[in-house]
Amino acid sequence: MQQVRFDEEFLWGCATASYQVEGAIDEDGRKPSIWDAFSRVPGNIMNGDDGTVAVDQYHRYEEDVKLMADLNFQAYRYSIAWPRIIPEGVGEVNMAGVDYYIRLSKALRSKGLSVVATLYHWDLPQVLQERGGWANRETAYHFQAYAEACFEHLGPYVDRWITLNEPFCAAYLGYRTGEHAPGIKDEEQANRAVHHLNLAHGLAMRSYRKTGLKAPIGTTLNPIMPRPASNKREDILASEYARAFNTDVFLLPLFNKGYPKQVTEGMGISYPVEKGDMEIIAEKIDFLGINYYQEGAVAYDESAISKHKDVPVWQPVTNQRWPVTPYGLLRILHYVQGMDKELPLYITENGCANDDILKEGRVHDLFRCDYINKHLAICEQAIDEGINLKGYFIWSFLDNFEWAWGYSRRFGIIYVDYETQERIPKDSAYMLRDVIAGYCEFD
Image 1: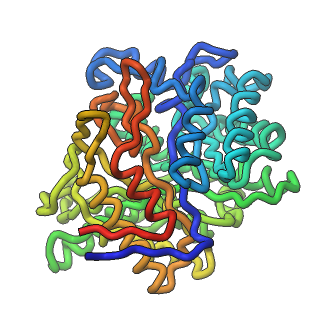
Image 2: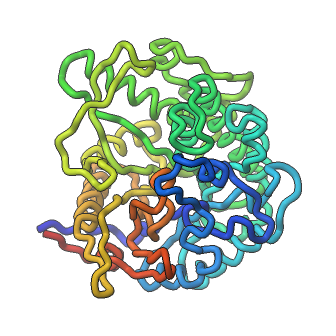
């Protein structure tokens, strides 16, 4: 039997992303994003799914906010859809789009929930992709202008800001492997995207500091730090290369440490850095969000660009074949905290996909309950070991459009009947309600 307990200041939240939950892709002036275009290409998304309706939060946000409050959550992390705010990517602000996020934010605050707004969770306006997307430096400046519009119009309604969600995925899955929108497979474009996403973050940070707004602002990464497959020097080196390639290229520049030498010298990768860029990227953040799901293992591979390859692991897996490795979170938290001993950290996403079955009005997702509980125990251990961890956001609040998996994988603690859009809390939702109330035991 293990118990997990946290102090009263610890922030408990739930999270979603705009394209995954909102739907209403043609309403109130919204124009297409790269995910609308990507989803239309046969074979890109499992079962031909898309976010046209998603789980209809655009129309059902009041119901969802009430559910959050009933489950005792203290914060909701949503993302703002760039194509709703500036539909053409640049230029005129669409006030109908702004109004939606004002209504959502007011509804959250009316129920006592803090508003955590992410500026970019991957839904780049398609018109900007047609000009080169994140491989084009100008996109970083367009993002700055979009961020400024959000700060101006939504500033009074937001309690915490996050600039980017997982730039690793936007750069590598979008431009290197092509499994995410915009579906490009090009090493050079991927490397350019890495730097331009980093620059976009820094530019938004600089703009925010000029607004006079007081809400904390930071960014969210998904640090990937696979363990070495053996204690051989080459496999230990492979682990370091993997961390540098997947994580340090986004993490180190935030702390004015530049791009890692394992990448620039060991892999021969260069980034389109211009004078002053690295100082902009290193604009001081107020907190850092960490998204964590799994830890893998790697061995050395001289033939790979990144000098490593994934190898099989032994742990039980989720229905996405992701291993359940809670101790990997502890290693990551210590590594990230080492960049700045005082910096507040938040778990901005953690959760798992599960084979959820609705039976007699209930979903008994005990696998997910166990997964969450094990990771919360790690969070508590991290705090005991001196990590400045200030909050935890479950991913996801609702079952939703799971990117290339479509609707075939369910991450929510709320079951969604996609035919009727009925919301049904799973056992994991009630378990988290107990945790937030200060009590949870799990065998």
